[in-house]
Length: 340
Ligand code: ADP
Ligand code: NA
Image 1 (cartoon, rainbow, N blue to C red):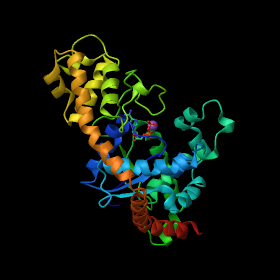
Image 2: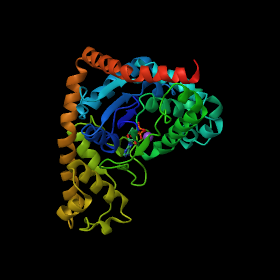
Image 3: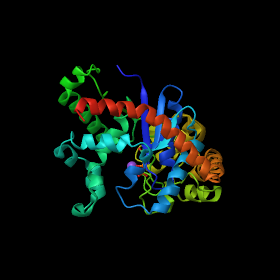
Image 4: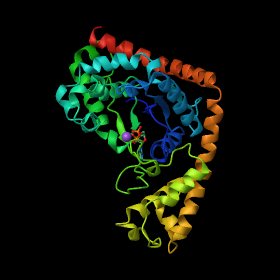
């Protein structure tokens, strides 16, 4: 069986929000203690939608800085940008020839992103999940922390791995490789807050694509912006309950309690034990203070790192060297197996 290896990535298309931080990054940081982790800035995924070249470059650096400032250790984990390691695109092509049209036709995220304009979106957007499978399998990663919205793509990666293993079983055996040439990667959805909801509408996920700035707290928001957004967060007039039960049907309140708990590294129960019976006039400022206390040092560290773009580029280059050292030999094996 394959050794535990984690792969995950984010697109350098936007500045990160609290949902990305609590839903993904906090978890990434923790996983470094138990796994070998590869955290990628997935720039090839970003260009499935047109990106301004200058902004893309700077977004790659900014996301890299966010990873590091958020606690990903570039010595311990591998941080790099996807396009720097050619094996991602190379294996993706092989997977374009393994995955079936019907599989991709079922991807709900494509339907959402393409909307009504399906004839006019890039073909890259359609085969994006094949590239995601390549991202993972080119390292034979076994564990992939994903958001709920990516579960279907991970299922596809498993199907691709399995079909490859089957289609080439004879050749895999003839070359003396393990029968499970590609491991079937396991998704895991953990993290202190798997669904941080919009501050304006407790039934929608906090998202970069929400047109309302007040719907999300960005990791680089200053103390004033954070305080204002929390103050304006949609809640109800009731005081907080002292038990979890009392949060039912109170999406706005539940979201804020969940965010508080995740930021404090505690449970919702513990937060309610402390704040139960108090109104939002007391709870919101406490939440804002906590968010500022957690996020301000990260934003400061990001600014410090971004002041030296050459150092970030050098760090990405070192990460890419380490990534290639794993991916290239696996890609060579793939070529042997396929007969290329
Ligand atoms: P967005 O959802 O804003 O488009 P991405 O899709 O780039 O952001 O998400 C990057 C990572 O952050 C993924 O692992 C995703 O699951 C996680 N994530 C995004 N939004 C949230 C949220 N509201 N709550 C929890 N995790 C989230
Ligand atoms: Na998303």
